Image (tube, rainbow, N blue to C red):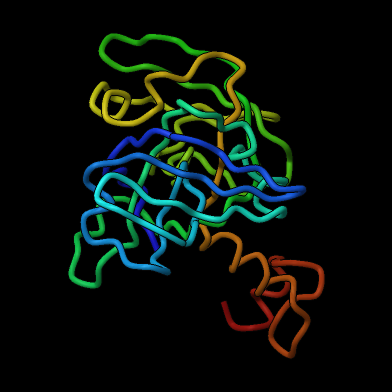
Amino acid sequence: MFTGIVEEVGTVERVQRGARSAVLHIKARTVPEDLRLGDSVAVNGVCLTVVSHHAGGFAADVMHETLDRSALADLRSGSRVNLERAMAANGRFGGHIVAGHVDGTGRIARLRRDDNAVWYTIQAGPEVLRYVVEKGSIAVDGISLTVARVEADRFSLSVIPHTAAVTTLGERRTGDRVNLECDVIGKYVEKLLRTAGPRRPEGGLTREFLAQNGI
């Protein structure tokens, strides 16, 4: 589990491409310090398993499913990536619950400066937007952010200078593709409400269902 608080921005040294998979070799300084074989690292918000490591970096396998559902397929030598190690049990929960399981990708539709902040408007599909709520949390390339506005086919975020400076977000431009992970709590609530059962509504949560169950 991760929190969406980026520890370091690393650099892709090389990408070994297979027929339908890849191995990412990433250069970094802080994150590799205490890595062990098999540890989890979020790379642009995608949970990957360390298959080798050394003082200056690490390598991780990327399977076909991950390449299909994330923007990791766009990475090349020299690409900069957000890195976060799995959260320690005694650590501070600075962001929100991030699993590293990307729901899909979006594209930056607009950038607009607002005094010291920058507004990012991200276009996304309905499979992602159904879980995006105003003032809710979302991970964009592994960065824990707060949703400021939601529209029919996009949502907007207001980003402070510090976040833009210490992540790859400050380097993003209109048209760039980003990984999106919605708040996992919303997905579990939806699943529970859609599952038929003695005290669960088959057609979703309604006023009648609440009344019948004493709410």
